[in-house]
Image 1: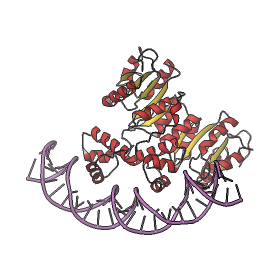
Image 2: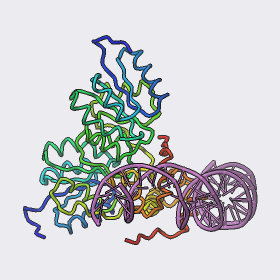
Image 3: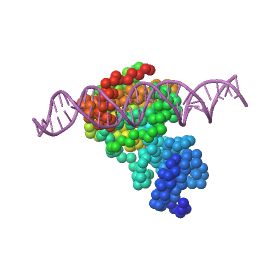
Image 4: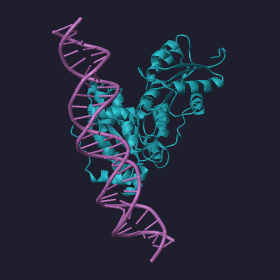
Length: 183
Length: 183
DNA sequence: AAACAGTGCGACAATCTGACACATCCATGA
DNA sequence: TCATGGATGTGTCAGATTGTCGCACTGTTT
């Protein structure tokens, strides 16, 4: 990690070691200082000696969700720009993250350019594209499940009961990745 | 319930007339003053003589998207609580809406209770913990399918394509009864 | 008439779900 | 500290559902 004091500091918090390594190198090559953490807990340690200007956070990790880091990061540096980057993207977690102050939200897979683009430009424009097809039933189910899960603070058992679904079945669904819509 | 100047004003912007009517009546019955607009343009006219405290906006309508109304609504009443409610939900529009100041974002179908629950979030209402059971995934799927089917004039093949579902599977689902909720 | 798109349904393999069964954890209270 | 109850992570397995293919039939269009 090069320590040019002028470079912007970029923190990557993600489970997936391979992903982190690749992204870190790509970001680094573009002139940022980078730091990597494999969990929210580990990220907190990193923050003792690294105050990031930009960050990407994963949601689904062992231990705490990356979303819990948002307040900490903002407290440390109110100017920080935070991008949520997850393979388990859903509308409810996106809404929550933005409300907490995240700058933007992207579903994996996403390439380095997309990531940096989202972090650089973040002027809200009311002309976002609106999908022309409705959600697939699979996607709708995923979104609904995520919403209810959020309302129950991530409690799987309670969510399964609320949905009238077997807990085993819900767990199996949660392990899978959400359906990708090909808009 | 009194319907005088004390009642909160609720604006519904949606191009689905049936949906608006049903929602309007339900909201009305709960003691709000309601106004309905079938498009963003129409909504602007309504705003000349109706300053809402709460609003639901649809995204996909003829003309401008409901998202463009957010700044106007907030300018008119900074305290307004805005809920985006759409059948064409997506993460990118959700992110935009929240950034622009929407309070929350829900995918249709959603029932009146859910809608009000999301909008009432800020009110010091003591009934926050009343966890009304959400729709089951089966029920949600049924409603969604019916809606898309209607949009395609009952064309099963087209509906199956739009939903990314196999025609055979859709036919089988349509033969079954709607899922009954046993609250 | 030939070409087409939509519909209804049979059949079969691949998947998924519901039901049980355990084996940890963790917080609470006796 | 131990007992108790809830939550969670998995494994198994029979039965239900879905993905595919195929085929006959029916309007529509050219």
